[in-house]
Length: 423
Figure 1 (cartoon, rainbow, N blue to C red):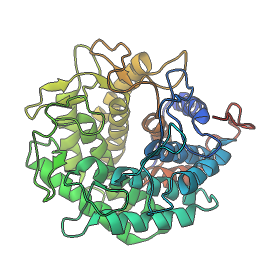
Figure 2 (figure 1 turned 90 degrees about the horizontal axis):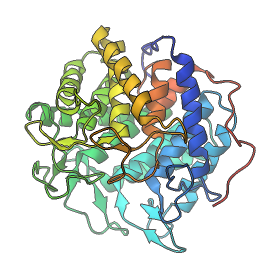
Figure 3 (figure 1 turned 180 degrees about the vertical axis):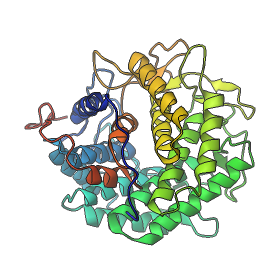
């Protein structure tokens, strides 16, 4: 990382954050099978055998276990290694190169689509593995960066395309910001893992493209585009509940981008350059997305800020708390800390499942657990990052921040860390 990290926030809840982070790792542990791929976890934390093993979930779980290892959690290193093996071997496309979108649930079943979204998470998992010193991580990261660069990067547009056929020959005309958002996250992680400035520069270029579109659209980010990167504001108007490509503006992405912009600046020694844009994205997302009377963030709005899908998804609240923490630390403004404190209370009251573990992934408009779009609890990545972030120095990536923090959780041990649960 270039320059000095922004120091972590302090407060009396640091012990709670550490305990909760460990509980999330415990919940996630059974997801990894003997082949290293991650299954979809149900509400009780058991693998749902009707679901395939997704690339993006496997990479996210692997990355999260990597953070646990960097922070000193006993048992996390073995899970990191197993997850990296799952990505490198079980989900790799040995015939055409790159990585399969998913494998299973039946024997021999694969989804061979090549998706920038999933490949960005391969870069993230590989980067975290490199920072953590895991065997094989450097080779995985080098290969993943090569594929992301050669197969998905559109140099003329300075953005990543979204999807190609399994043999790479057919490029889907759809272009999207979601894959590029996680591309920025991955490129920042790759910069921290490799020291190569070009990945940081590329992350900054993508971020600035998104800032430009958002600034021209009242700070509501256009999410969907055609092959020429012309915004398609009415895309999926008939699919408001889509988990990855919903119609309209997504306040949670405005919050996530606000955090990423500040991390780009910290990584590049340009602190302050994108702070105004981060503030505007954050304020717009909170104004449009937070349901004051009921509490909770809506999933999507139309282009005037009116809610379209008013259900609450766990990742949006996690990104809200994370963005507020980073804005507080980089600006010194107390309002962000106050917002984060209030949101964490809401999260603890409504999203944290104190009986079965992890967070409810979806609530209805009365903040009652629901399951129209997200069934089960397949992903601890957003929650785990958000809960540990206030204890870490700020850098371009969570792995570098965890490494800089040192072994904060030394002596903590995952439940069942000496064995595995086969599936």
